[in-house]
Amino acid sequence: MLNEGITMADLPVHTIVFEILTRVPAKDVGRSKSVCKQWYALLSTQYFVRIHCSRSLVSSNQRVLLIDDLTCSVHPIIFQSNDYGPSSIVTFPFHHHNNDVSILSHLNGLLCVCLNHTYELLLWNPTTTAFKHLSTPDSHGFYINNLDAIGLYVDADDDYKVLHINRRSGVLGVYVYSREVDSWRNIPFITRQEYLSPHFNWSAGTFCGGTLYFTVCEECWVGGTNVVICFDVNSEQFKEISFPPVPSTGMVQGVLVNVKNELHMFASTGMFEMTIDLWTLQGDYWIKVLSCPPIPPISLSLWCDITHYVTNGNWFVMTKLGKLFTIEMDMKPF
Image (cartoon, rainbow, N blue to C red; front, side):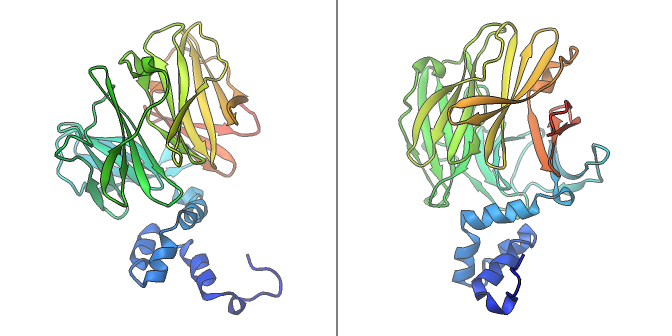
């Protein structure tokens, strides 16, 4: 909004261009990059991406992308009824088999996916249909489910990168792919070596505030070790922080989400009745935001994956079963 007494004619041309293009659809932004070098530089900055995404974060723009066997579909969300509108089909631009594509990580509309029959990693933009194979002849860019972990992030130089934590027969490799230079390189992993064991499950990385966060949970039902591993994307250093102080008398699972550049965790605990608490990270410490009453026994698959949306101050959480829940942030339970 312009200040009183200031008109569009008083603003620099690049400011006017910025204000207009942060309000147009992503496809039009992509086409606008070819206008001139100045526009390409402006539209490629992380600041532009952040402002464009924030201005797109309204109810009418929210979509969920679902992959099922051979098809990929995009559904608008009807928040008033916690339901989905009519879908549109997205055609995969790369060769694939039945039930072959798994989404491993996402950031600003860019997806890192795996082709399950070949284990290859790809970067894919469903909006523009552009994609890039990340696998190489020297065995970089191949993903093994339940052994590897992936995180997609952008560094201080606006370079989109993929962190690949690779566990093979007790041997660890940590690799970073750079989209700008189109190559992989190895980096050191400095934390406790037991986390490299197959007995620990690593989540996908969640990018927030210049850091990639992974939950690392021991594969046991009661009393296992649960930590969060942090990767500073600029210094490329790892460190460990504790889980929220939740009871360890039952199954424990944490799902990380980035909401408005603040890290949150849905921590579910229990055995026959599950309790969900919502925590936010402040520094290296967790602060409880919201507690929910115990939930009767349900399928464990409900806790395997959580996708969230934010609109009008509320959270809309979609579980792996496709069901939507509402969290009203005035502390009412959902």
